[in-house]
Length: 201
Ligand SMILES: [Zn+2]
Image (cartoon, rainbow, N blue to C red):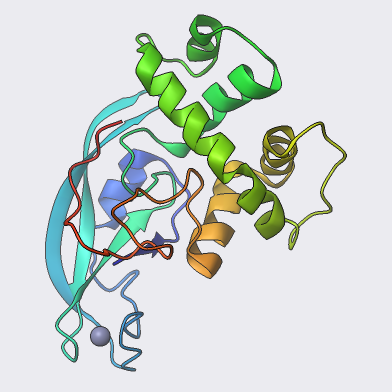
């Protein structure tokens, strides 16, 4: 299970802070609710493409000694199961769907040198599918603005609240994924049947 690492600095600072296992150690297990601190359980690496960053980052894992399940601490600039960081995806979606720019211009707005058509469509399709749910969830934080459709309304709400702050609320409080959970996961982002594959888009 992935939970949020409450860290809002640069990727470099993130990697430095990660060396201390106590710093963000969960004081209880989110899966079995055992009220015992979790044990540090190494790292895994994942790929991340963000503004001025394209590489792998370590993700710290903890183990619950009661239920024997692991919890990983995902930095809040990254989305579960997506290779691209929130800031990049946000810049692209706003440019493409709110400002109506072309794929090429939206990719430039998101500082992406290369943007395959399929990837852009994949983000757009998933965001559109998720927009109504985002509007409903974010209404807890801000009054929904008047907009033509759920997609525009959700984008305006995310821009007003801030994408990272919105993600923090959606993911930590509601287990809602900004772009919707992949099909192999149950609604709350837990594995339903198949094991997760590496981030691919
Ligand atoms: Zn547990």
